[in-house]
Length: 304
Image (cartoon, rainbow, N blue to C red):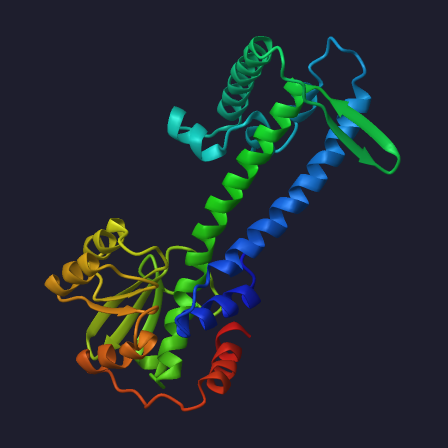
């Protein structure tokens, strides 16, 4: 799932207005998860019908099939690829398949023991599609429910991370263009190289430039009080920090390091960026009175 340009624009608009941008990401998570659930149920119907024998573990046979993409195998087993990599310090296909099968066998055994212990538990999941119906017993139902839970968790973690990465660069570009900062006074770099305007790769450094001084900028869309935020700025030797929210502790840390900061969801919000430009002696214009109209122009320059 990717963050589209339109979603990125919506997030930036909300950030500049001091509003919570998270609904944009939550909506994407819901849409992606529901589509996955529907497709997953269709696959379950097909797999169940193809495996009539009660002696065959049809779920493992169909959903942990080594010919499937490894991302699908891990989710279907109740794991995610990152967990496997952390466990084995590797995520090769062989490792993923082995770890997924081991985890699934352990999960299946745990569910079997639970069902045996809970004699009064009776659960049947009925899935119907185009006149075809399959019944899943309690063990099968719990396997399916677990897979859905793991998938939603993976989507949530991935999209929150992607949202921040996707918005960081265009947000800084937007701030600069709203204040009429010359293209000569900011730079986009990846691994020490200048990148193109339409490049939205991950590891991007944004710099405000004044003469020979290149001031590294950091953007973090995180919750208030996240201790990793200020630590990241210090580790990366950033001069400017733009964040959704900052705690008093964060602000004290940044001030002690003489780091210029902008808290978007606060009184004045993004308008503090003008003071940052003043402190760094970077020439700029006054903010347009019609910000919405200016934003449309800026977005066309950045995204199109």
